[in-house]
Structures are given as structure tokens and as C-alpha cells.
Image (tube, rainbow, N blue to C red):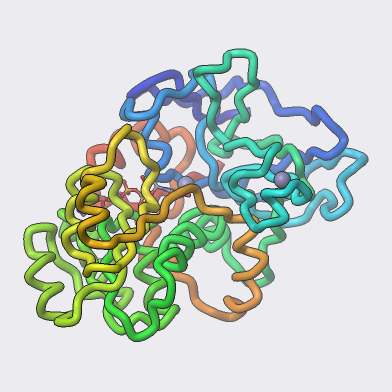
Length: 350
Ligand SMILES: NC(=O)c1ccc[n+]([C@@H]2O[C@H](COP(=O)([O-])OP(=O)(O)OC[C@H]3O[C@@H](n4cnc5c(N)ncnc54)[C@H](O)[C@@H]3O)[C@@H](O)[C@H]2O)c1
Ligand SMILES: [Zn+2]
Ligand SMILES: [Zn+2]
């Protein structure tokens, strides 16, 4: 099959001779990938911020059709249209039972291999023609009727992730919320904050075109330099909560100074540094609550999808490059990393 191969920082190649994945256990499925997202999380190993094994198919946001299932799979048959959340989960362990599917005791992240444990097999990702899905019954989600492939890609990660980031702020109805970082995750957080009733969303990013997208979702947008002034105007009583979807120390510092005393900072960006951009002293002196961690997509979708029936998702605003062939993959990674060509969210069509 053809697909992309990650071999180290700045090294993603297209290959047309990858081995077809095969079932390795009775609970597994093989999915034919129709659409696969490129995510800010793919940039961490690509830009060398996060160590990762090489010779791995990257990507963790896939939508496709079930090709084959093991004898133990109960919920899916060949031909089913499915979306594949970015981690696998069993649906039965204590973490899954608590709604924390992202930290399933048996879960794995797609498109990633642990560099510290060479004995653990990496789990190849979705940026290829076919994908092996362990724990298929616990992991896969039927693509809801009427949803497009692009909606499915957003539902596999960025939309529930942005939603999680806002939910972790607590009650936002009638409040002012700040979102720092307007990639696909931040834009989905803007959308979620509006849907959850925030009175105002201040959307912050140094890239003007990304700010324009946030405005289309109902935010007031501003560059990092102007955020404090705008926040003082929009929210004289202070900002209740800040979503940090940028992943930089500067954004974390901004979060700690923009939020009002007693407020909450939701760090939804993957943390790749040992220390935050603000200190424990700031945390104490301003009575802040900080929440962080991987979004539990599978658990959240069970709760979220019924309420989104018939609701237009922010797909058109978020996805800038909806139909790239996998052979454009190496270029798309480089362009995304350079913030070039207006690329916010690319979707490959294997
Ligand atoms: N927690 C989870 O489960 C989860 C899931 C998916 C993605 N993520 C993470 O979320 C983060 C965002 O993902 P993405 O796909 O939107 O990435 P992205 O790289 O497209 O977006 C990051 C944005 O932050 C902006 N930025 C940089 N410095 C800033 C600053 N000081 N102030 C405001 N904005 C600033 C950049 O211009 C960019 O637009 C990444 O760290 C990604 O790994 C987390
Ligand atoms: Zn992702
Ligand atoms: Zn589990």
C-alpha cells in the first residue's frame, strides 16, 4: 500500500511499497482509510520537540470503511463507515469506565512508537491506505449518518479536543473566555465555547489569517500584543477561563496574566517542556486552577454526538486543505510547520 513514513525530525517520506496491515488478534479490524488529518500533534516529533520512534506511519485522525474484522469483533462488519479516535481503548478497564478512554490501561496512540521502549511495537497511523485498529469494539465509532468524511476527521480529534478544553473551564455560559492559539484545536475550542454559551470569546494568534477564521466562528480576534487591552475592554469583571492551545511558554505566561484571580487555565496543547511558562508562585498568588491532559475522544463522543445531530460542525472554517493526495504529504508537513500557504488543517485522501 502507499502511505507516509516518519523517520525522524523533518523526515516524512511518501512510500508506495508499505506492507499491508494484517489482523493480529481476534478483536482487531482493518480499515480502508478514506480521509486522514494532519494535526498539530504530528508536528511535535516532526519538529523534534517530542522523541518518537522512526519507521512509523504517522497520523491519528482517520475516517474510512471497515475492510475486515477479527472473529471477536461484535459491533462492526466489513463495509461500515467509521471514524478512528486518536487513541485505542478497551471500553472495559477502570479508566474507560470513568470516561477517560484516552488513558485506557490497554490503549495506544496511533502513529507513534515509544522511543524509550524498543520492545513495544509502534502502532502505525492513518496517513496510509489501510490501518490496523486494535481493540476495535472499544475504539471505533460509527460515522453518524449525514456526516461528511471531513466532519469525521474533525470528530476523530480536534473537535472533541477543543470541546474538552472548554468543558475543563467549568461553567462558561454568560462568561468571557480566551482561546490562545488558533490552529484546528483552538478554532474548535472557539466553536465549543460559543455552543456552550460563552458571552464572548477572545481569540488570540499571531497569524492574521487564523484570526480571521476565529472571527467567522463568532470570536473577537486579536494578536498576542493586543490581548490584554482587548480583554480589559470586553470583560471588565475579568476573564473566567483561558484555553491554551498554542503550546508555548509565552502563551502559558499570557494565560496566567489574562485570567482573573480564581479563574481556570485549560492547557490543551500537548506539553513537551518540563516546566510551564508561569510559576507555582503565580499559581498560588492568583488562586488559579490549571487543568491539562489528552482528550478522551471515544468517551466524549458517546456523550456529545446525540446532541450534535443535525448541527453544522465548524469543518469548513477549520479545514483549509481538504483534499491532498498522500504523495503531497512531505510538502504538506513542511508547509504546515512553516505556517505557509494558509494551511491550518490538511486532510489527505489516500
Ligand atoms: N490534549 C489533546 O488531547 C490534544 C489533541 C490534539 C492536539 N493537541 C495539541 O493542541 C495543540 C494545538 O494543535 P493544533 O493542531 O491546533 O496546532 P497548530 O500548531 O496548528 O496551532 C497552534 C497555534 O498557536 C499559535 N501560537 C503560537 N504562539 C502563540 C502565542 N504566544 N499566543 C497565541 N497563539 C500562539 C500558532 O500561531 C498556531 O496558530 C498542539 O500542541 C497539539 O499537539 C492536544
Ligand atoms: Zn490530532
Ligand atoms: Zn480501557
